Image 1: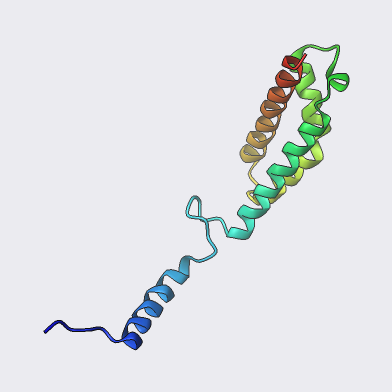
Image 2: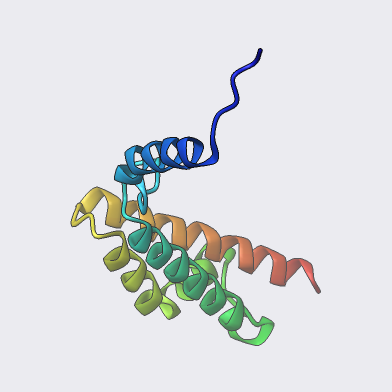
Length: 118
């Protein structure tokens, strides 16, 4: 005769498994950053990208070499980039430099898309 697991035993087992896994709740597996930090970084990235898109108009970017326009666009969104650096909470100069480089790279993409729209 097969043994049937009672509902209370099954519930208790699920609670124990959930409690053990709860030690990792609220953390991102990649890098171990708290979920709130990851959300802050995601929000800061979105704000930076929105700034780049908002400022990447043909008129604002006209008349200069592509790289200069990308640098100007990245500079226009420096406040958003700084918030992104702060959200990362790393305090590492290499991380800050990588984020700034990423902002300029993304600005270059916006410049090229704006230029290509003509």
